[in-house]
Amino acid sequence: MDSRRNRDALGAPDNFPPTLDASRTSNPDALVNHSKMVPGEKFFPTLDSRRNWAKPSKCKEIRILVKMYQRRGRGMAISLYDPLPPLPQAPKPAYKNIVAMAVQVREYLIENPQRTQTAAGNRFGITRARVSQLMTIVENLPDDFISTMKTTEDQSLLKRFSGKTLLKIASLQSPESRNQTIKKLF
Image (cartoon, rainbow, N blue to C red; front, side):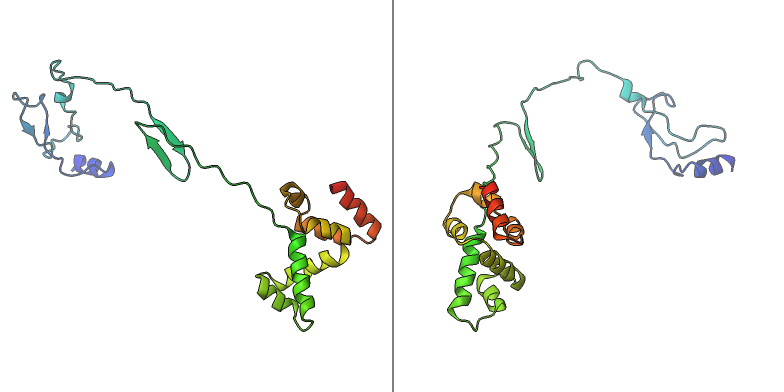
């Protein structure tokens, strides 16, 4: 009873599977069942002594040196033979020409005075609030700047004059301060 309580407390199973044990029998190949516990005896099975028998003729260690290529990304890519192909280069970001878009929206609204900013937003796939921002940009910035910017393809110039920057410039109070800010960014 004592050994059973001890066994349950440690979470050991009641019946152990038969194992090979050379220390308990005269025949080293015999199966020994450890499920019959004797009080005072260790209840865990003994190590299989056959694991320690090393027969030099059957024990061989082979080491292979293989060049392995690996790359981490969304998953692990591993190649044992050929090197992995190079990753495709990410395309450089293409910045939108906000001024050209604002001019298009203004021309669309001028064609028919009955059109609303909501109709212009539906036509160009933008929100009414964005149409309002574009109209603020076109109305408050100098005409020479608008004529220059609406035809430019220079990505560095388009990056400098983003929509947020153009709105900040358009919100300045005086035309002189707008011109000075534009000259600083050019």
